Length: 416
Image (cartoon, helix red, strand yellow):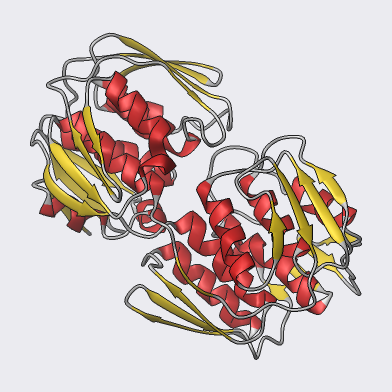
């Protein structure tokens, strides 16, 4: 099993191109099932998750090929409606195929998802929304099963904001009969980007970027030809790396507005940030200042940056309070950071971080995607060597991370 070996203590300098967003690419890959034909998706990151999703599509009968960051999907020959447990268990996003299958074929048999080890992330909102649109769904031996489904427009309000369920119901509604009104929807850039893609293919969606969507169903869509937006979480992670190491990084191919909440917190922590049209330059302080953070749905501070921000605060001057209101038990990185000398007290979904002057390299274990990133950041700033185990989590969401960091001056290598 691969590990990352990091020798810390070196400021990072240089320019780093930010990859396409995993969380934007996956729902768009699922949306190719809505329209038979050849779809072209550019700027698709080379990640374990995008390759796993390609396998899901291939099992359904699609033909998928990759040429660098170009993903071509021919969904003409899709002839199955079953997404099996063996693949879905490895990646929660596989459930995105549910609505497209119901919309196009009127049937689906999709395994209940697996995914990260933390947090209850039920699919009840996905199911309740689809049922409101007329889908009679059963749970049969761990599978979501729909037969003879005819989706119809409906009004549905989300009790809590859900990125995944918003994307799911958008894909259901674009081919449903009649008008669908979705209230309290997610407005994350990944969701809005999916809506823009669907509109470009002939969908009729009003209200993109707001909390209410009105979708008039159409009879057919055109194949997709699009470019995936940049990954705001990867960008914010590199920004945090500059802040932690006292370096200076130019993040290229980014949209600053997509991770503005993180940039403001890093500024509050002492970083200097210059924003341009498609680039952001982050210069870290000699030592970060303590900051308080509360995670919220977009445009608030992303829960996907909570772990990385705790790493920053671990070496900050003062005491920081980090509260995660999105996922209440997403703190498996805390005991691993403590192995490196961090002083963190957990109180439910609140982490009280007393900054120390320096962290010490140690052997640690990654438990999920963003926890992995926080350990990499800590290793970059720590004295001595840090060995991170179970980095397959990183490969799910960060494209060529060690190569990018190495080009910026980090002493990092993948070892077996």
